Length: 211
Length: 148
Ligand SMILES: [Zn+2]
Image (cartoon, rainbow over all chains, first blue to last red):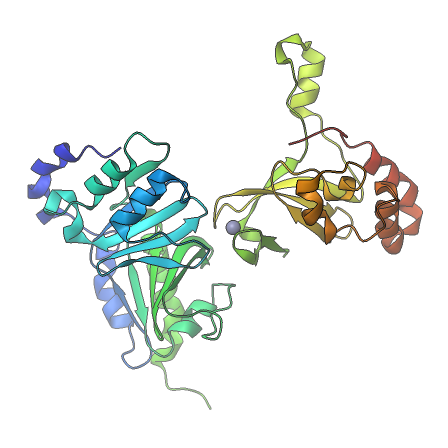
């Protein structure tokens, strides 16, 4: 369980925190093709891994903190500023802006932890576990389709759904946030690989289209 | 590449899954009562079935849940996917259990009067008639009373 009192003194570290793909920032900018496909690393986010039986009392308490839990694969629940992604029948990923973290004045991890209480389950602070890639533009789907076997056609994959699958052969949670925008959550150690993989997949769209 | 239908996530590529070996290997009721040979056989000895094989799979890249599968080891044809703890669907007709009848219904197409041997031999003869006798035999030697 997150020991929230231990986090209060770490704010000085915030200034030297570096994101897992920060070394790629320049490459992401030069590799993006505005109007076709743009790749950015998103800002830090607060993430909490939650394991709880959603039909139990403690599941209801967690759901009241997050304003609901998703019930099936692909569903995203939550409210403004807090999203809950379905990872498994009793496993969820809570995603919120960085400021929601207890060390920055928020109370997300702490309130989830106290909602669970002593009941079976877990709340783990996973804020440093994954980074966020934001891929957008009319060619974003075509880029993903080079390395993802799921049906990403809009008739099947709707905005507001998130699926845990493989992109470029690595495990990724893929969240469709808009008609032409996606968020990818790779684990930090895969951030470099996935960033370079996506840049490579985007490269063809920098050249004029061959009729 | 197999397309495996996860009970939680739907159809996904085989690369998202991990194989968990033979299903329905019961944990010994009294492990301390076993001699070394019996213990080693529980740990390491598994069937090497040619034909329909009950096995465990984990959707490791997706929902991280385990499930059971009946798969033909010759043709790779996936015949049935059913939850952990449920009995083998192609044996369910022989052992009437109300809770599992629905899982068995879609996979067992033969009448309930005919035991599992009929179902096994029908599928195996359709692919390779010469191997039918051995397939049938290995199918029936799988642990009968296993629950997991
Ligand atoms: Zn699954």
